[in-house]
Length: 151
Image (cartoon, rainbow, N blue to C red; front, side):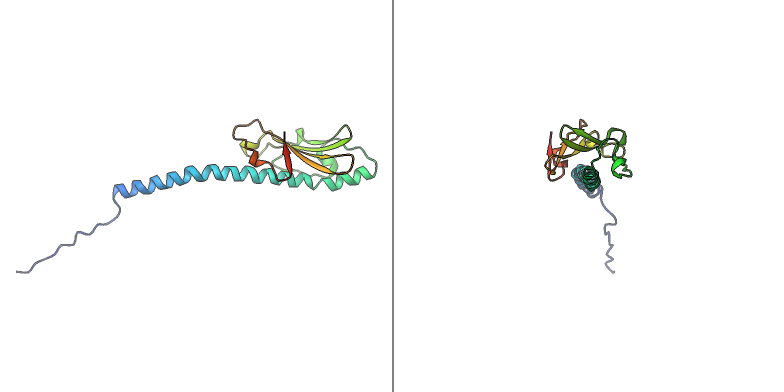
């Protein structure tokens, strides 16, 4: 008589193996999602900083012509941004300083909504950057662009 071997090889995954994979994915997601949201907020702050920094040239040119800087951002040639609340942004004089400011909102990350980036031109012709914190939950000082201060 022949000895017949029956092959009972496992096919597929066991329940415990699947649960381990799901647990690992859940742990990775719990770490990755907040990091991604912080990255998005930082990149949006830097984008708005770059968009309004481009207006410094126009502001300097208007000041050299003796014009008074005031009004909406479009007086400096700004077209639009889906991250800036244009109704709350603009150009103004603050004593001897001129201020270009942009309030974040519209499609900006929730963590940076209501934050304000101010570019301040001092009487000696230098420019400084100031960021007024967002009142929204999730704000972190790491969102502030390099070279800007925080109030």
